[in-house]
Length: 292
Length: 157
Image (tube, rainbow over the protein chains, first blue to last red):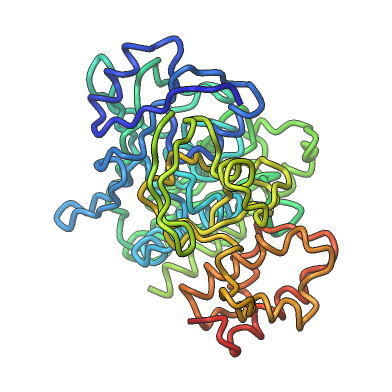
């Protein structure tokens, strides 16, 4: 690894200002489980690493009781989310996604913000944040701005963040009553796997417990960036949800996906799994709603 | 160069490090604690697992500078000073959890972090906690059995 200086600012402002001083030769680092691999492989060769670990406001996990908004700071680790009773109970789709990222050793250190900013098509953490209509708060030299998580990604390894900008937190609006959500990381093995395809479904029902008030179908590894299957969502919204309708939504989502052949799997297999898993995750959501 | 202070097993340590050293490099190459192994160097195999503030981490993906003011546990800290093995180590010996031994320090540190926090861990919880530790010899079954057996022999506090 090429030597670098490690800087540990205490505030976001200080971090942004340090980046300003060293811009071309600086990189931000949070948990480091992706960045250190890149440093070792020589994909990144900064002279200055600006650590976000000591910035307290980035590590908060908080739910506002009045608004119901959930705030997840960028440096909250996957393990913190996985162990949170609130996440397990109220945001099962987040639990499903983060509890199988890498290994426990990686989840104890790796952060949700890092997972998003690394911007790989297989980022498990992105799918629930999109399904829950998460909004990213970003701060940089030009001040603060918000971007919906669904609009955060441009292409593999590339986000809308400009040089010097920092992802501070994700805010998730209060889920509607009668909401169920689930994610499956579909791969060939149970452990230490990247998803062949990642499928997240969120359904909210009307008071009649049949009509779909809101549907989110979000796919990972189905294109260059995590994506919503809008047509499939439209098919469900406003209709009475049946298993057959979920099957049609699965077909639609598979059609909408931009899956391709890669070393980890073939396009047709991925499409088949979207078909099957959209239906299964939808059924899981319905079960959840009925149970509560 | 930066000076860091940390607790390593039973010792308080002050060490002058370079910012780009990983914790694994500090332990093995600088301090000579070669119990912790380097397998892949990329966070895939878990051979380098140590415990930092009660959490199992991959020391190959953890900068030494981030160990400042932390408590680090490595395999060297497990046996008593008189040479008596820690119950988890003894259990791995007794239950065939060790063959070539390369993964063992990482396996045992992951298991220790688990049982320290969850003394009654179920088989499923043991599997989930050890999913990031790769073993090419045992087929894992004896390892899971070793951890389960250690629950009753003092491996869990």
